[in-house]
Length: 83
Ligand SMILES: [Zn+2]
Image 1 (tube, rainbow, N blue to C red):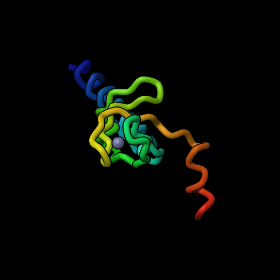
Image 2 (spheres, helix red, strand yellow; image 1 turned 45 degrees about the horizontal axis):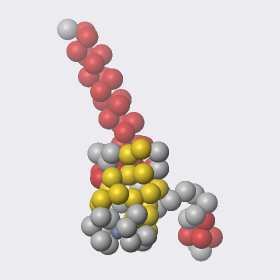
Image 3 (cartoon, rainbow, N blue to C red; image 1 turned 180 degrees about the vertical axis):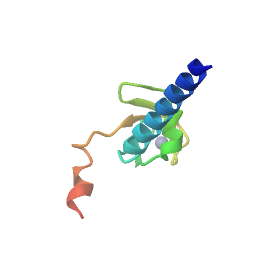
C-alpha cells in the first residue's frame, strides 16, 4: 500500500504547486479580448482556467466574455511606480 502514499504525496505536491502558481498569476493583470479592459481575477478561477501561452479562458467581470490575455509585467509598471 506504499504506492498509495506516494501517489497521494505527488498529487498533494501538484495541488500545492498549482495553487502557488495561481496565486502568483492572480497578481498579474488580465486584459479582456472583447472589451480590452483590465482586471485581476481570483486565484481560484485561475487554478481551473484553461490556457495556452498567455491566453486564458477566464470570464471577464466587465462584459462576461470568456477569454483574455495575460498582461505582462512591463505593461503594469504604471501601477508599481504609483506606490
Ligand atoms: Zn470584457
